[in-house]
Image: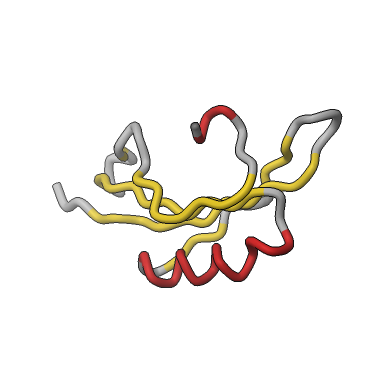
Length: 80
């Protein structure tokens, strides 16, 4: 069972009413790349978060709670 860590950046824009709409998640190769991508997107988005998750890719079993490494702006309640 080989465990690996994956990194993503998730950004948010205005949705209907006061809701936020998630953009497509951006996969990154490292924590540093995820933070840089999030910092670059932050000025143009309502919210942006970079996070990692560790698990077994063969089984599709990843941690229930991702590790947030960068966050700025507004987020849906799932990211509180």
